[in-house]
Length: 173
Image (cartoon, rainbow, N blue to C red):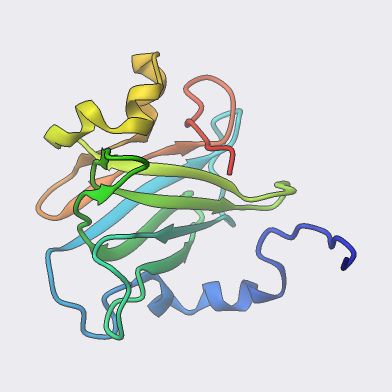
């Protein structure tokens, strides 16, 4: 059995975050409803995190030659991130359930021993009411930390707080 290795946040691949094209999942010519996913990353004190990394993964639309279903962006000095992708649709869940459209989000930052995982759902989507993950969060205030809000045509915004009051719900993966 191989020896376990240390967990790294972004490890030797940090240089990839400097390439702004990685923040555009449509850069290879993907077609569909293009959206911009924005937000701000803050720590437990509410301070902006200017050197974090936000990655997204999607199951829908499926990855293809023109759509990697993955993107990554560095947070700016104001803690903000901006990623261009295609709006996801619903995907199958465990058993015979259906998951509401969402984006899987990974947070990497200085001081984190391991990456943090969460999701971004879309405000107003009728499937949110029956999504298995959202439904499992009983506290409405906590559930709301996973809901992205529209900020104009094709722009969806979700602030992510790493800990403290109004901490984003993170998943144990």
